[in-house]
Length: 302
Image 1 (spheres, rainbow, N blue to C red):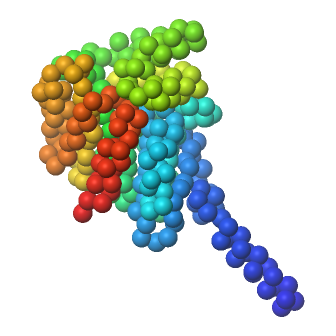
Image 2: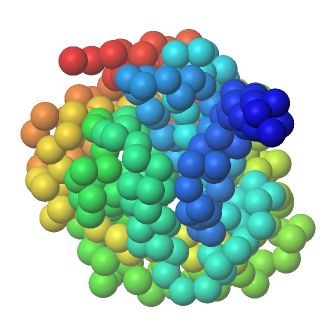
Image 3: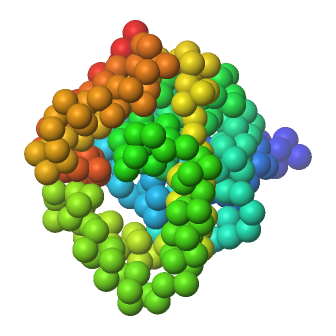
């Protein structure tokens, strides 16, 4: 009996040691998100900083692949992918409001996994989700890095935009995305990709991720992105925060681009602004070395 008990204990210890990464995390509790999936990388030793990465509209976690490889030896990474994007099963994301539900599941994920004060990095739509999380659940974020995202997306087209003015246009775009043929959709994505990235790698990834994304989820996410104005809530966000935004000559005058971002985030008086020259929306593809440097400065700041 003693020998058998010893073997059982040894087997359990071995199994515990072998469980690592996302498998170990999921073994800690039974919470299973339905609005997104998570891949976990990096050491789980006490004191390791946790970093949550959230990609943008019609994007997968792969947009952070290069950065994740650099950070994984030192940081505990939680790479989010929204259900319905880049080949991930839609789950419940094709019904009802999307963004608030994602934020609440992120809150549950952080709380039930006892992730204390993580750094949260969000690109585009993921940046808006990051801001929503920091506002709704201040205890869930230790610091935030926003990558080319505005607290009210329509400001990019009209500095006087309001939610009520934008709603009809947003509803029309949602319908168009849903009803568009797959051929027309893909043609538009191929034309749009060079506007989003200067990198050939980035352009190919953008088109591929769009093709693999559910258009109903894209359409609803875009509608909510266009009709969510977080500017009145920005003053309530007090965690250390930084914003990366791109600039190149095709965008117009540099001073006008600077003003757009600075005025949009005026309520966050301690926000650090980082302008990326010669980049477009997907800065992680366009300037990976510069992106890594900013991420490292952000994570190591006291």
